[in-house]
Length: 94
Image (cartoon, rainbow, N blue to C red; front, side, top):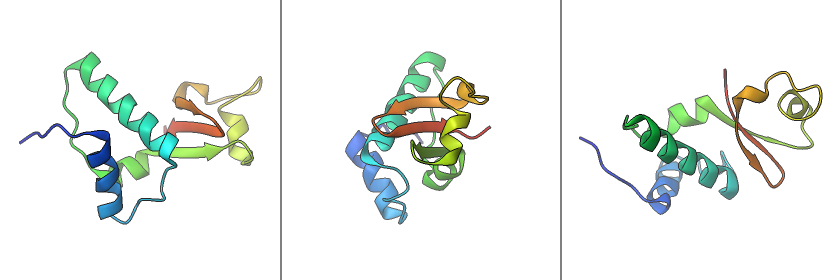
């Protein structure tokens, strides 16, 4: 059974699972938009599994050492970047 949800309901699902601080507002919005775009492009519907999303996606801030792996001249993992955020990136673990 599939249910279409709004961004507000997406945020509420993270709160209900105790994961409201897993991602910043900007990262949550970017993740929601990314997943909606994926569904539109592939025709595949995604089940909302907050824990799986928290395991599969990560927000990395500019001041974290790991950030350089995804952004910049020496980036080795830039293909995993889902979205650029005001102060970091949202990446898919690979």
